Image 1 (cartoon, rainbow, N blue to C red):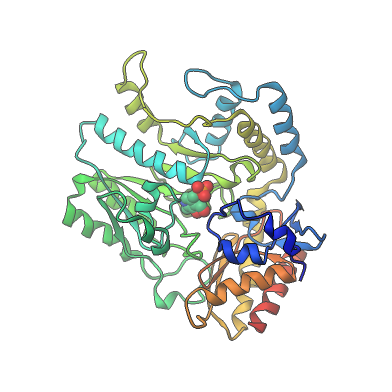
Image 2 (spheres, rainbow, N blue to C red):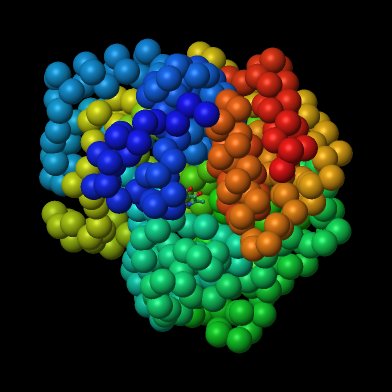
Length: 440
Ligand SMILES: Cc1ncc(COP(=O)(O)O)c(C=O)c1O
């Protein structure tokens, strides 16, 4: 089966693996030793097609020479400088180039090192913005069931996935959840479902219960990604925007997965025609080659916070030692060149209908209970076998064994290939999925 030798496993004890069944993995490791383009390679040299772009990161395909060269050169020129009170030109340049892709007016970019940090940063921006405007009573946050907003304590409180919360107690107080948007009639729908926009009125209910004037921000993933690709009902995000405007609440799109082309537009905000006030991103910003995240803010939010600060003092007390790390900025800039040169976003838009049809063809497998899709992301649910998640977990192991890598959450198999994916790759992904789905 191509698993590492047992003696390799004995050297694996020290690494406490994140989000992984440590005992099972160390007894039965599934490793990669290199990658190129659409493929990973196992230590034995077996090819494994990457159907999840690493983890929604590798939009431009693995091991891009341009990024490797840029990072190498950067590390030999300026390896590190603190981002506080000191600067380097690439951070300013990258922010400007990112702002060329964000919706109009969302042109102030704060760098972090991950999606989780971006989420907590956006929470602080919302609180600081309201406080600056004399509305410090706005301390509450609203998010949604089945949401994933990373693993920092703010994001855990926003999360709507029980396993990401249950070990940690209540987390932050004052976070309330709207219902998720997956309705029974959405089964096997391609793209955005027609029904369910009225679920956005949950926000109104929470405003009526807790006082809209007390809510700082609403966080949503435009398409819930980690739970298993839940596209928003048509009109849902627009309705959220309207309620936020009426109530003076900031709307935050967590675009850690949906950003950078996955929806066939730079961001889901443009794909769905709804502009938030704050937007998080990470992952494909550097093609996953260096850790980096960011928050894009409406200029008015930056201006409000910055102008209220002292003439020569810090205006926003927040930042990470590695914010705008030179090597991450170099990787990000190389990635901006690749987005333009390879027309990755246009490619995603062109490939999406074919991708969606191909993945939906799997609904013929008797074990498949639902397929959802939008842009270049889809999820296939398999029937629960005994306990929830058991069959999904087994599926992702068998897929690795026959040469396909993807992310599973519970019994949902999430497919989100690199945006360089071609027809032949799509055929290979669907054929391997079909083989495993028929044999489960
Ligand atoms: C919507 C969303 N927010 C936040 C995160 C957390 O990002 P990270 O793992 O980089 O901290 C993720 C990760 O998948 C995500 O999908």
